[in-house]
Amino acid sequence: MELWPAIDLRGGKCVRLLQGDYARETVFGDDPVEMVRRFVSQGARRLHIVDLDGAKAGAAVQAALIGRMVAAAGVPCQLGGGIRALETARAYAEAGVARLVIGSVAIEQPELLEQVANALPGRVVLGLDARDGKVAVRGWLETSGTTAVEVARRHASLPLAAIVYTDIATDGMLAGPNLTALGEMIGAVRLPVIASGGIANAEDLRQVARCGASGCIVGRALYDGGLSLADAAAACGEA
Image (cartoon, rainbow, N blue to C red; front, side, top):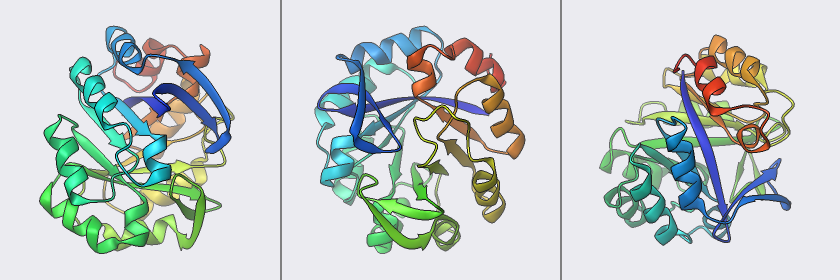
């Protein structure tokens, strides 16, 4: 299982939100480029970056910073947040971003998701962030009436790299992943599914791996010191 250490950006800083709530933010670093270097020096083979400002605004708000992070990384970077136009996706791809996570567009402009996926085959990831099973959009500020499984099935025939499935209720809470919801998503499609939300320790990662996830995104546990990157990699079988 692939380990994806997460770096969430807001206002040019590394932050983590509790359950996607912008009012419950913890700043973990003032220099995201240095955070990239730290993770890579500790053995990270890939990184998951989220532009929280971009997700909220629907635009590439922190593109310049993200470009510097990708250049410093030297490992594949997966980016989500504010990618709601083909031109934005192309610009990030040209800047070296390996994979682009698209979420809100899948609900609001499904034809655009299809366009971007076909223009960049194998480089687009469908981001499904669920609150009580229903997909949340626009930086998790709004909840749609459509279930995550429905959206996944609707787009499963596109040339996508994977699905990132986030359970909002567990995100940032260090209380363990929602294995039931994750299992339902994995069983619903043939695409690789990357889990996100709730990871607190190595056993959580092993449970996610047993569910059949292709990868797992880990954020707060790595910053709080409850889980070292080396232990996380070992639990994923990447040591």
